[in-house]
Image (cartoon, rainbow, N blue to C red; front, side):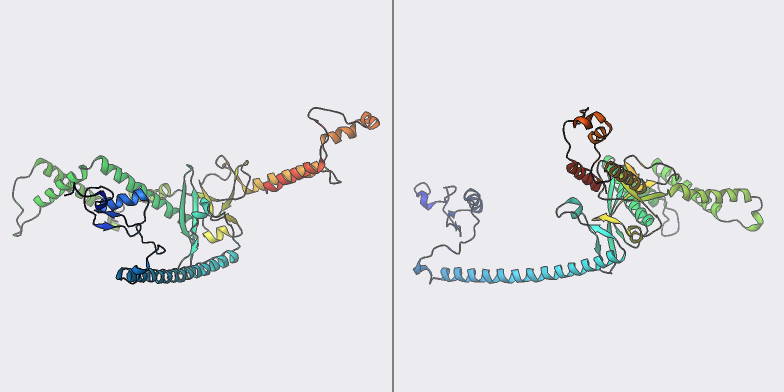
Length: 409
């Protein structure tokens, strides 16, 4: 029968089976879901009914026509209700955001912290998470620059010291590194830990006492005996260490005073080797890229709020971490202190003022030669020298020098 059927009576996609479904959008008849999906892909059809499509008058008073109108009006009502809910939620969110920003602005003004905003869409603007917490505390986004050139972005409390904040960051980095190392070791040797754990469990079960208080009988393998002996040996060693670490009575400590003093000395020196000291510097923004980056020294014992007081930051502070060395030790390459930057800027200003004459005009090389050459005064000509390609506009040269000076500030 399928061979005798007309193509108009078959599925419009596969032309094999009788149609069962009709597309609400363009009334294309299909036989299955794959054919309907193929129709949507070929015709770029959304599958949604067009509310503005023409309907004949005799089809309006039918059940399908009434359902069509009812669904259309219900969809409009549902869309308006959803829009009102979204607007209300967005208004509440904006109000909460404005309140938090007002509190943050009062905090910045009270501590005289100047925050320059980056253009919207820039990476620094997107990564800024400085905000007020629900408890009313300020949480800064802090960028740490390490000696190896790596960067870390951390959310630090404003009332924490710089040393504590960096110690927290170092602990998080070590934990992350340990997890990564354990994951790589597990991928390389997946059966190592399971084998050790299996042997240890067997050893524990073989030496577990029975319910009657008698030791469990049965032959044990060489591996099990080795593990048990190793466990017992380590237990005895730890027991000896614990006994040796405990303070002996006063009557028996007369002969062991030197050893005890040596142990105390070793315990005093241990924290110094595992707790390195660091110096912290705030990276000064808006400095010329042609010069080294400018660093402002910070007190490591001060809080983040106290360290940023009277300072300028771009969205959030960038702190350079340097291992503490001697006081006269140089900074890493590519960095300079703020006092050296100010001194160099003052020298540039003095050179510019010396270049500008007392009457406000630029003392060019041509003017100097013209003033020192009496022959040029008689003839009214300017002596031509190397690099003198014609008359120089004093105003334009002054504008260029002033613009360069403002860029260095």
